[in-house]
Amino acid sequence: MKKITGLEMAGISKSFGEVSANRNISLSVSSGEVLGLLGENGAGKTTLMNILYGLYRPDKGTIRINGNPVAIRSPRDSIRAGIGMIHQHFMLVQNHTVLENLILGYDQAPMVLPHRYMRVRVAEFEKKYGIHIDPDKQVWELSAGEQQKVEILKALLREADLLIMDEPTSVLTPQEADDLYRVIRRMKDEGHSVILISHKLDEIMSICTRVTVLRKGETVGQAEVSAVDKAELARMMIGREVMFSFKKTPREPGDVVLEVRDLHVISDRNVPAVRGVSFSIHKNEIFGIAGVSGNGQREMVEAITGLRKAKSGDIVLEGSSIVNESARVVNSRGVTHVPEERIKFGIVPNLLIYENAVLKQHTMSPFSRVMFLDYDSIRDHAMELVDRFQVSAPSIHVPTKNLSGGNIQKLIIAREIHRKPALLVASHPTYGLDVGATEYIRSQLLIRRDEGGAVLLVSEDLEELFEVCDRIAVMFKGQIMGILSPGDRDIEDIGLMMTGSIGTDTPKEQGE
Image (cartoon, rainbow, N blue to C red; front, side, top):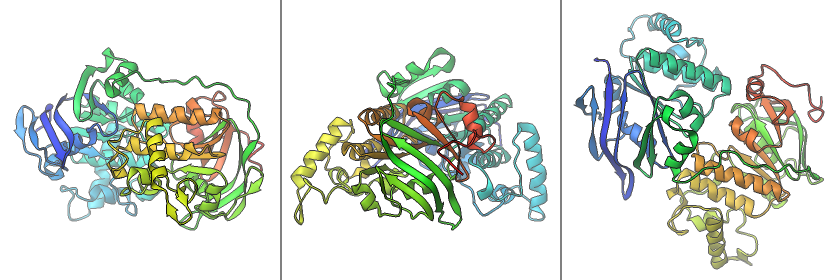
């Protein structure tokens, strides 16, 4: 296999039915270069890279490697050409060891004693790239950052000269992200090329050499990173100025809205997920929960919103206990919920936009009269939400699944905020969204806080937590490591708390 010294995609177009995902897109990347691929949700970034990796075939256009046209009909063709891809959701077998995952699909592994051969190869790459990983651990025991290292090792072992990385830091702590950047820089120095799909402008600015910007399936800009700033990239990406920091007006906390007392919750695997958590949230306050996914945040949110039973402890909303009440009762008491998985739990994809706009409210006035739904009121309400919350949709009469991820999230936020709930629970509300949608949703959280509402914000994005929260609690292995104000510590300290390395003195609220 000849080394990739240059790759070019020219005039690439791809449609799915009547939807045009890519239109006449061109980009190039050279040996030893990190190319950032930037764009809004639905801009066509992942589709373009799936074409390069052989998961899709273009309707028209050409791909050239070292100046020669190539036909990439499958991932096998792509791998043979020297192209590897690390997907946003890792493609690893959770119950296998690291070594077993590396051996799977590796053509050069010998039939006899493949584990011994692979152990030697892993040691070589660890030394060369500084990728340290226990080869005998099962994948489910690894952190997200460690799993990503396994994916990188898989690509390097297959002699990938060009590595495509789709949102590589979306589930990493700041320390894990720094480790990844070191590996990427080492790969760059070794002559490898990287195409980095990201919606994080800071990431693009810190690690990439050039950037290609897509908007609505077309190329709208290309530049050397050293010649542009974040504001210019954002303007290219969404076509307008973007506000990177919010003027968060200081608010005096009001009455206690939610009080969680010594909460214990069991996970789906019947092991403790939340262990003795206590905190309170006041009116005029956004209370953040920081932590790497899988440390009890989901189970805690489900207990608060009535989706999961608590083993022990109490959850008090405005003076009345709601622990182990049903989700319907909790919702009727004034708790609304923006779920972590917006497609799976936030909407019914096949229902029309106006139908999703009244989920959980369809039995209430004015949407229901006696035994019948009032469709005129429902449609008027949906139009109001779409207009007020800037949901980009061709009509309220189309299936909600046809919207982009950012617009689906805007619709969910609109539905949950419009009722002016006593408590808004928002789990990862901007995960995977572009800078424009992220800006809008963060501003809506602040508006709700300034109206006198209480907000519980669960996020892995520390920048987001620092930007909008009044207080931040850090969770690790089902416990709160500390509760602090954004100005108390820097982002690195919170990152260490997210891994259990350090903690504040046990806060008064947490209790023993």
